[in-house]
Image (tube, rainbow, N blue to C red; front, top):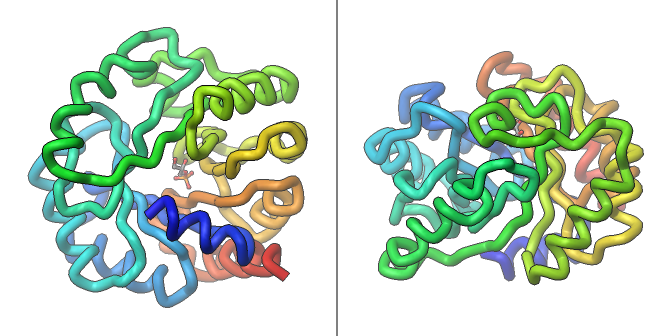
Length: 245
Ligand code: 1GP
């Protein structure tokens, strides 16, 4: 799947749709995934900060996989919720967590299961940018200040030097505003691994700004799950795909 993402990145920017298994029944999750695939999203991420169970995760992943062709990648909150039905898993570390649990502890607990299940791992450095929302709270993050691009660059370089495949700047699901474009620009200028940006992206304008600032992949979740704002989503997809020309 990393190969798939890298190949697609050669043609331009990507959009990924985050589906939280707790937020809707399985059929609805499959419907959303299939609609978004039709609109041009490049991959489906499945995960949530709270309320993910083995059952709702497996059912959601299986349901989605049965109706789409694009990859389903797990976006795990801990070591307990891993689905063998997914195509890959982000093997991620929350680099600005105060707790060793999300830096490395959960990953250690998960590693043997991941190996035994044979799921492809995509390693990712994950940094929470203020306000950070729920994921910042439960992850005990020291959110990156919105006016500190220099610190963001240092995290991005650390992720790259650790050998991570991707670097993700996360404002938190439902954030009132996305990661500032200045931060995205500063990080993109310094790192050479792909830059993922998510949290609070609601419209074409902010998507365009982030893409122009250098984001390689945008992630949207709430825009799909709560508002069912298909027009907004279309604008976001258009902005991402326009970045490809
Ligand atoms: C996932 O932050 C993204 O990590 C999703 O954010 O729900 O605000 O789109 P939204």
